[in-house]
Length: 128
Image (cartoon, rainbow, N blue to C red; front, side):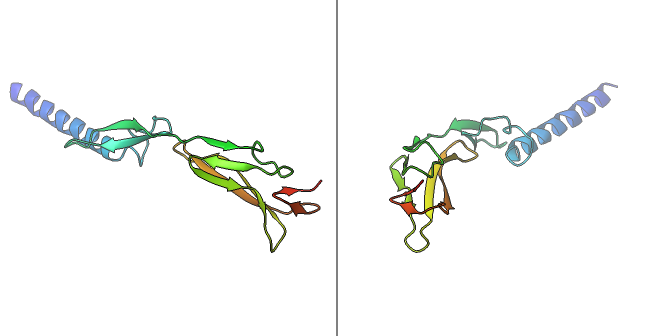
């Protein structure tokens, strides 16, 4: 009876340890260990079992002088050291509008669209 209890305990321990390795190695691909971390965190593996920790990524600032998707006002988008101005495409006359967006890790990225102004585009904005 005692040897059977030891054998069952060993089997349970092995199954549990295997489950931990799978959970930590594939936690970012399935609904595992790290799926509950906010988007601005990233998982770092360390140790023999792949046990990881979450590290907060630096988040750059993002600003748009015209307040976002504003086709009637020229804006300047700033993400860290990068600068993007709204402008009129010389060939088509369409507006290229820029605004702040955020990726799945909470970091700012450039959102942009090509917009056909109802009248015409002048100096990075549509005329009313």
